[in-house]
Length: 191
Image (cartoon, rainbow, N blue to C red; front, side, top):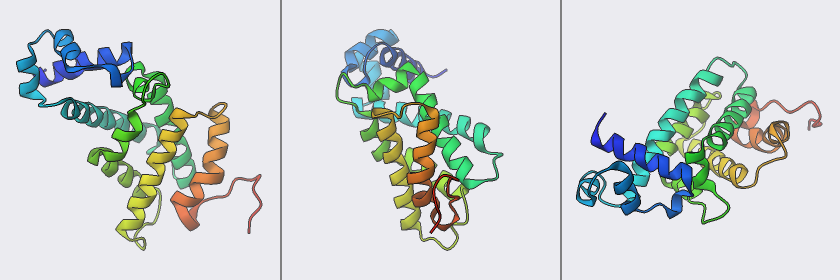
């Protein structure tokens, strides 16, 4: 394990204890058992450390999603279950859920929106949902940004339960993200 990984692990422990926005570099250096100079050698700012942490956790989450929904053939089901899996993974992880803490300025949405790694992963997920060969790159990128905004919204303002969130995703998100290939829920009349 590298020094940078040990520092990120220490930051993660602190994020699990309190909201991520309130964790400072001094706190992280102390928790990692290193000097501030060592910390700043690996991460020249709190933004750099946050970026590294977000990217590491996004990659972990993407692997979980791939395992959970990779074998699902139906794009609507894959979108809905992938989104619910992502929400559950963040909510069940105290370090990740602290980024969306209602007690302080939630910084998770801000980081999700500006992370190039998150952007690339969500765009890849959107492309995997169906035939995007005829869709230009800007459209895929807009759909991915919309999906990130939906995830952020549901993390900050959850539905009543998983079934409620699934219903909202099927009715309001799948048609936008999947376009014409979206399968309408049985309770929603067709055109």
